[in-house]
Length: 322
Image (tube, rainbow, N blue to C red; front, top):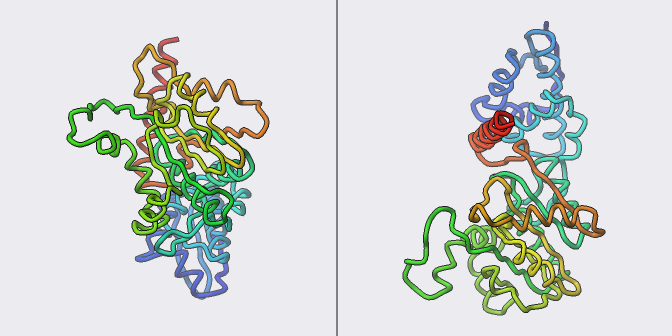
């Protein structure tokens, strides 16, 4: 079966095909079809169902391209996945919505529908809990939202915190003072802030007290007004730590809590404060809970495959134990 798609402008075709035709080769591989560009149109050939899905994916990518979106491997894979699941109608939701501009002038915005819902929750609610596997942008997008709120003068401070729990390693032997010892735990938060603000601007705000990056233990006894507060790696908080953190909320503040419930580094006899908070707070007004999945992974495609393989492995183990 052959279907034809008209290409109105050359730039559209260039954007769609990608360098060395890598995007089109990915579509051909994904749907087992052949795509040829001839006389101002694309000719898609293959089995009827495969051809139909490939045409849907190409049309969706052309629509994204027409709205000024760059076409790359990540969004080609994402769009083909949506088409396979019959969700191509949702692709319109992917455009627009720039959250903030990075220090290098790069627009930062949600790249998946799950990420878009996560950011909508952050903007709408006082407290948002975002859970999901590695690579879904939970922390990065939360920091981008914090920087946007700070630049817009909605808040006076950005406070980033995470529990100092080792992931199977001991850092107590490291030289230096307490700050030097906890810095390795906080490195992902520093990296995100450097990307948004640049090292010099970050340092300036840090010295003024507009930005604070500290371990969770430093939060006890404080009330945090006019602040955008992010608790990262929240799956490693205890019940008591989570309740303590949530009750730091002051006037004019917003909280985002991020974590991955499959990566808990607490002792087996200690319950995760994040898992309990998701149960306790699910129906509380002005609190949003967003659950991202492996489909929202925006890192290297291998990260998505690894996350999926682990999910399938653990699901199978659970079934076998029953």
